Image 1 (cartoon, rainbow, N blue to C red):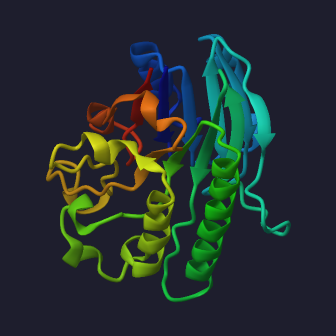
Image 2 (image 1 turned 180 degrees about the vertical axis):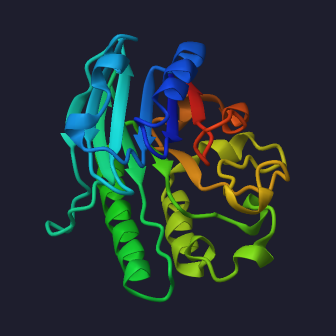
Image 3 (image 1 turned 120 degrees about the vertical axis):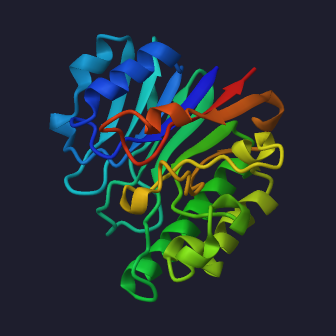
Length: 256
């Protein structure tokens, strides 16, 4: 069973790339982020033609998340992260597929920091931790996958000096991410690195893709009950190099 995630950075603009990647890799479940599309404009028909059933929480501008399931009907569980009924940003979608809970999440960027956007980021991550704890206590097999907008350690980016003031590297978000791991969640990509970080994001600016000046901010976290099924995980780096691609590459995990 392959679970994958891709911050697509405008699903309609990059639909052809998405379809080509799905045909080539055939993941069983796909989490998408940063749709930049309302739910009614999501390209459902094109994806269903490939055999993918879709759940979508769309929104204009920078948000929007989706879950795709190949030859299966995802059972919706949550269409928003619990804990703040006034939060209208489309950043979380959770469904059950083949007995596994899968969440597509797009955590807030938090810049500029300090400020209201950074405060929102920290509050959002606290809510994510509460949901993760709830699932763990019930012993459900679950994968939290998506763009966490956190660089876990200095080894997960090309040059910490270039990002010192960025919200992605601040101690508080890093501590929130580390807290999930301390509670028993497994960072699947970190398990496969073999001493070399797998970058997942390369900014369009300053020639960062050709220089491999990347960051690891897209993650796959597995619950204690799902961890024994981990076989391998990786990043489809080549997709980032395709002309017109997202500034993120797809990430994936294979489960027994």
